[in-house]
Length: 213
Image (cartoon, rainbow, N blue to C red; front, side, top):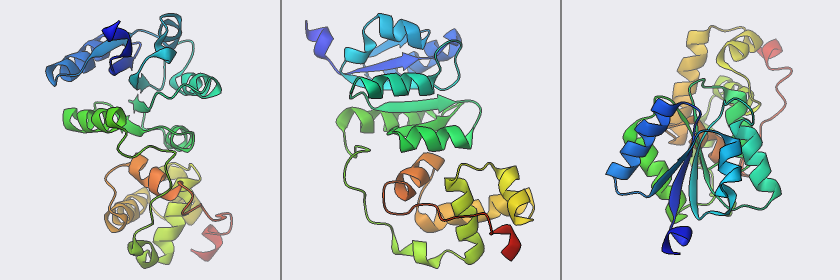
């Protein structure tokens, strides 16, 4: 009975080596862990009713991580989700965070970042549905070009698409992205999305951005 209510890190990934590696890191840090080879197995074994947090791969055969996120939302399952992906797909990150993902990390994930995200999710330090925090004053210091890049990022555009839209190089986009992260005090794309899409800063229309470049 104690096990059924104990907060647990539920790891869902179709790659057995990744599952084992994540479980080893989490267990070594003293976390209770259960692993699942698919979203379907997670559902069949009652994962949606468990207390804890979900470490979830985005791309899997059958039901994807994003589809499992939708499944849980439809059933009002409160599990916070830390997404993992080896693809760095920005549109997927935008969708995941907009729908309440706790964090979105790229594989191979740093052990420290993973543990920090899991601990934050388990403790409920800053739930995605809490009142949005105030934007830092540094938002007003973004240059016109930095704001254009930010708007396109928030619209789900990938680096090459942003470069084409603004008639600048990929390297220049990466430079502006780095400046945006530095000015806004964020370390990851998920932090940026949570900050900007939490009701405080919505993307502006970007269709005419390239015409002003």
